[in-house]
Image (tube, rainbow over all chains, first blue to last red):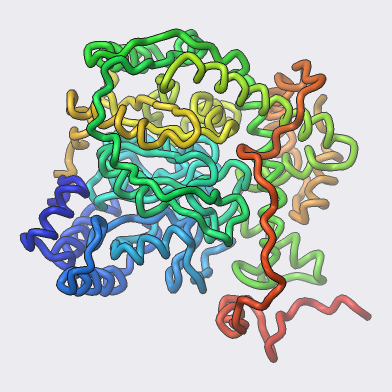
Length: 485
Length: 95
């Protein structure tokens, strides 16, 4: 039953073939047996999960079940969950038991979903390999010597290893899509503002967006139906009519115009990745789609722009960790400034400190215009490129990541090499557009390749349909890593 | 433009992160690698382009100036490193 999709598990629960307690216990048994191999969970609380499962079964007997009622979902440890240790992968929050729920967690609870555990991640979501965690690196279920991608690598590995039916993650520069690609699963970053950021520990607030991770496009739609929605506690949460993200899954895609940005295909992608992505594009042509070349001329500036804006916002957001109101406090200090400095030096890891220093510098007196304002202007040029491209096509398709999973340790000492992993995913964050990744094949080493689909604002339902139609014609998303059966 | 060791130490102080000589040296070379990457966007002609601070054109929502939260200080202070008599304790700051 661990290999079933959320939709089929939901049907089995509804038909009484299975109880949530049985399903939850099954996943907990698998976590006990397998999660050590991948280090994908930071906290597992069997009793808390089973309590939610019992409540879900009662909800069902009372006739109040929804599609996610009783389904075990893993939560990235960036989401505050009341009563659960919520660390964000950092020593700074290693003792933080959240006193409140994130909006997304409230919504999952209200839908009767079961929290199966809090997943490992890059510290404060800063990383593309899930190696910067205070809790040790996550390993990729397809090859434990490689990384699962990041920063939502624990969620991706948990779903790939069939330790959860689905998961939630966050994406600031690719942190849902890139680990989904490297771990052979599906992930969606919605349009900025669709999912509330309340209780989602802040990294770069103008870019952060929560989203679902699962094994099929249909399952992403079910999760997004619950996660999306207005929340007055997030000032950037959009007030829109509720929509059913499953509504276009069955829509035929014949005649759909797929934009292929020449910059996504010209350079950068490893030959093995390019070959698999081109085969996926050919599959779309077989399904009756038209392809049209489009251009995103400023795309190459996305990484430099991102590494001004994201650290600037992070340096401001992470100023709150001062050792006074919650979290880690250094054991020895002489005065208040010393308390702050030692707490932050000891509580944050190297990558987080590096980004705080970069962010503080670009915001400091005399440099603000040259860096921060210039980056915001180039950000607009990138967003305009997308607007021009979407006048000529319905969706944009290309690789999610330039390579497949790389070996643990291969890039951790070279920040720039690590940052360039996100060259294809960052542009959608800067523009605020929805983007997703679905499995579309394997390289010669048997490692999964992700196909990225970027849509216009609020076109998640259409994109999910485009992905679902591909998944009806192919079985890449059903392949299972060796040894997780 | 490359940062100097003094820049790194100054910024670390502004960010309230303790840093020793060796750590500052190590941070310097990696940060300068990042700034070489950032330099690519500095050459772009952006005259007449409005800065984009946000993906959506939103105006700040206002709410009624009314109390909406109950008193939860005991809950919130339960996760604080050092509390006494409902107060967060820090080293003495006034002589």
